[in-house]
Image (cartoon, rainbow over all chains, first blue to last red; front, side, top):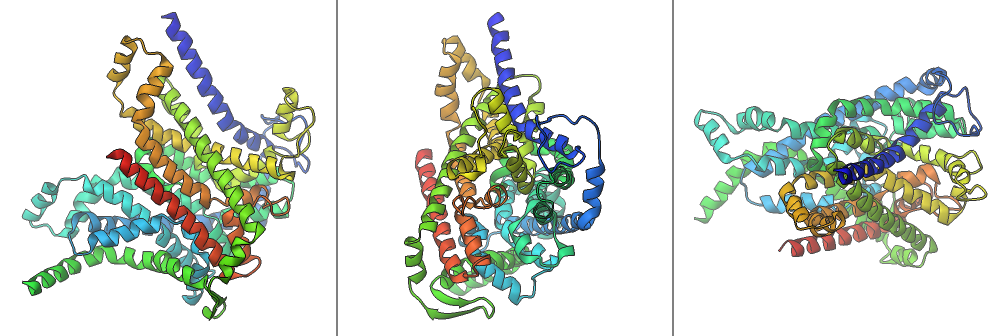
Length: 277
Length: 299
């Protein structure tokens, strides 16, 4: 019995160590954002704020259209996530439930396209965007985000759709249902947890996307948050309390979504697949 | 007979087309076509404004690439980063998953906390690491190390190549461990408890149980993670942009940073395409080989 409790405290000791390493940087960021204004790093470092002071948050929010950037990111991330999930569900349905010649071949092209990061093809993507007049447009950025993550989402959703037995569909068709009703009223409702999981991961990825947004959005007022933060850092060089106040504002939506949906995300461990950047 | 087959195929296509057409268009436009076009551009003089390939220059870009110091430096950095972060994430992720799997109370709590770095923006946590590893005695890491008497004077972490690469690797591991933990945890849940109980009765120590039961049973998960993490490691670039900005003197750039700088700072798109092709080829070969090995081990 005693052996067991020693073992247990050893386990918790290890876990607390991991937790501390994970959390300390955030704590440090938070306490720095509460400082008056820190052009130099305070010595000794403070992990806990000595007083609550949100003035940097107000300054950050008001300066450089930060509220606008926030809205921009929200718009781009939401619309692209909706498109990606809808199109991926459709094609996952096509690839899993309908037989047609060349299916395996087409699907293997999808698989192949997942093996090389899209960012390596940046030059042709640039010219495509340019010739379609999609530079500096949210529509363009949304389409691009959709194009590059549809293959992987299709792949994972297809795996999920394949689980359902064909009898379900047959029963529905006998009752007069079409393919479309099967898709809309059978598969989609049954796959809600998977769709939610992939949807959240996709949203988080799009919210955080950096390089394409940097290259394709030119107008200052149209920028998204990650770019704004990078430029913010350049403008307020070494004013870390302001930079971190802005950073914390930028990560709040993801943290809220994460805490609200952590059950899905954490249970869905094996579903997450390669959606990580 | 043949005719019948064709018309049936056509009908099936008509049926499936509404479902797959949007994805086919988008994937072709933004993934497949760029992939092919990229290879083509790398063999030509290229005018980006007119999107015209001019003279065929054969392997000129590739010859330049394989004789350039920059490329080998970036390749070296990428290999260091990928090797260190993949090994670190697998190692710590497996330990963490095991620890969480063994406790009864607080599983969710520890999962949520250790997953936090994974969900946080790359740009933001990169900045955070730049700040934590700041030079001088007030940098957080320096302060800890000096206080614990592990170093006598503070280190200028980001000012020399070796320590800067070290910081980048630590960052990669810190950012990704939560994710490997989650995947390992899911696979540990699938191992039946009776196996461990039987081993305990047979007198196996905790370490023996780990080596003889856990490790072999998470082998497939490990191989899967190995592939995904390697691809991720090779394609990573934000951390370099934000933490060192390639410095000192462009010596910490990784492959993707080199491609970006060549294209959007030097405006040499044709050369950037060649760099990207080699990078894509390396990643493709790596994941191809890993897939082959995985398949063979499964059989």
